[in-house]
Amino acid sequence: MNQRIEDLGSISSSHPQGVAPQNHKSLPQTELENILNKLPPEAKQWAESLPWNQRRYVLSLCHLLCAASPDTQAEFLDEYTANGLIARLVENREIQQKVKDNLQKFHIQTDLTEALVRGYIRQFYVHSVQDARRKPDLFLESALRIVASTEERNNIFNYILGFELLKMIFKMSWFQHEKLYRLQRTQEEFLTTYIKPIQHAHRINQIIIPKDEKLFFARRDYFVQKPVILDKKLIELAIATFTTEVTTNFGFSIIRHPSALAFSYEEVFIGEQDLIFPN
Image 1 (tube, one colour):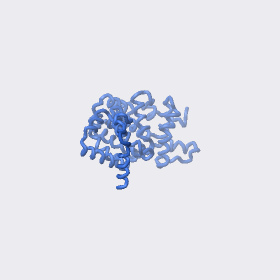
Image 2 (image 1 turned 90 degrees about the vertical axis):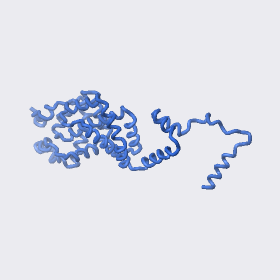
Image 3 (image 1 turned 135 degrees about the horizontal axis):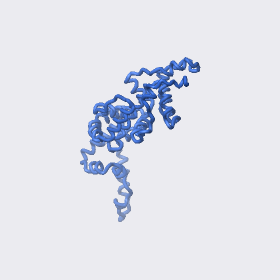
Image 4 (image 1 turned 45 degrees about the vertical axis):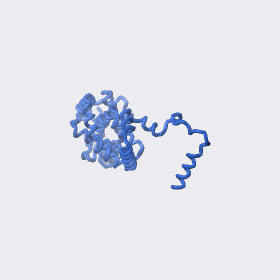
C-alpha cells in the first residue's frame, strides 16, 4: 500500500516545471456525472446535496443491496417500497377500473382490494427473482424502474390481470383450452404462448395424466378432466411456467385492446358441444 501511495505521489509531481495540469473543465464527463445524469432531476439534486457522512450511508446501502442474493433483494424491496407503491397505485383510478371490468368480464371472482394489491407487489418481486436467476443483472434495474416511473408502476396492474387470467386457464380442462383457443384470431400464437406451457405443467406435475392418448375413448377421459390445484400450488406453477414479462404483457394487451383475448363464458365453460364428438 505504501509503495502504491509513493507511486501516485511521484506521478502527481511529474509535470514539467512551468506546465500546469489540464484544466478541470476541459476533461470529458466523469463516471460520477455519467451515473448521476441517469437519475431523475430531483434524485440527482438530492444525491449531490448530501454531506459526506450521509453519502457514506448511501454507499453502504448500495453495497449491501448489490451484494445480496436476488431473494434477499426481493424481500428488502418489498418491505422498503410496498407502502409507497400502494399509496401511488391507488391514485390511478382509471387503470384500476379497467382491471376490475376485465376481471368481471372473464367471470374471475377476485376483488381488487388494497390487501390484494399489496400481496401482488410482493409476488411481483418474488416472481422477478425467478426471472433473475436467468438474468440477474436485470432484476434490480426492473425494481428501480417500478419505484421511479408511473408507467412502470402501472405494470403492477397489468401483472395482476395477466396473472389472474393465467390462473383461470390453469384451472381449465384441456377440452376448455381447446374451446378457448378456437375463439382466438391468432390461434397458433395463443396455443404456443399460453396453452401448451400450461398443459406441459399439468403433465409434469401429474395434475393431468394422459393415458392411452391414441385411444379415442381413453383420450376423452383425461381431456375433459378438470384440474384440481390448491391455491398455493397454482401460484407456484404460474410463476414457474411464465416470466413476469409474459404475464405483464398478457394483462397489458387486454387492458389496451379489449378484444385481445376473445372470450365467451357460456361457450367455454357451459357449452355442451364436445369437439371430440362433433356432429
